[in-house]
Length: 147
Length: 147
DNA sequence: CGCTGTTCTTTGACATGTCAAAGAAGTAGG
DNA sequence: CCTACTTCTTTGACATGTCAAAGAACAGCG
Image (cartoon, rainbow over all chains, first blue to last red):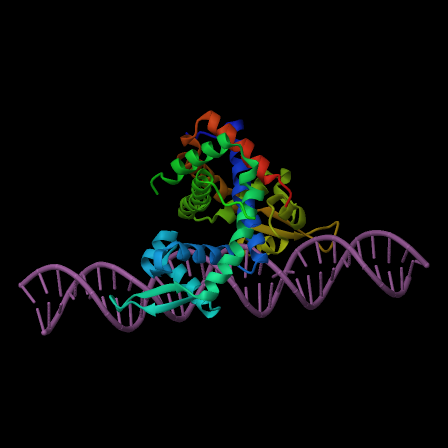
């Protein structure tokens, strides 16, 4: 017997679905004006956080929770734009090592403050500290559920 | 001067981004096993909620918050699968009117209980009533911000 | 060593979305 | 009524993601 959603659950679920659609699309729009897609930004910032700013595809993809194929495709596009570069891995000839170019780092440095403002304006600044804490707790709990 | 995120804000934001990626992808995976994409399901269920189960593209797209182009493309694909049908609008020769086929309704009826379980198992059932209320309030507030 | 099976990255085919342009059909002002 | 603008849907070109297959290189074991 299926348990349908109660009225309050239904309302909440609709609101959350809307959030999950609308917020990322707004942030994406803001980023696009700076010449980057959300995916581009994630790649650049993930790469920039790695000491040495270089990373093999497998671990890189794992860190980003992307499929290797997706990262390979996307990295190829970003490489052709001069944002990142690829070298053979001296330790394992199957592997490539990606690293930020100066241009890529520059682009990230240009975009980061604007993106941060965007996250604040469109999200964080509208939450009380308590709400923020609840969100973190809930989001972590849900995301950590078994796949 | 850019205000960087405080440590707690940073943690919360990362958790929420993870939720926003992971939850929809899990729900999508579950739905796929029933033979539908998330988009398919949304189209079918939105259409089924409309009295008479028929809708012109413009209002339909607006209701779903999809671009008309997206809906047109997607509806064409679903039409070729026999899930929905299109008729000329007698009142406005530019318009089409979409409606569920019996097959489409059947597919939805088959998939709905499973999807509902999925939403519960992967999300709703892991929240306290208080948390659910906070989420609804916050999600609504954020989504209602100006674009 | 030499096989055999595994791991890693890339590739190609395909599904889905976006954006801009095209076409057909409404509507309003003179 | 005409003309000019607007609205509506579809279409085509392109960007992005998925999945499965291909190729190259590794690793373990006889």
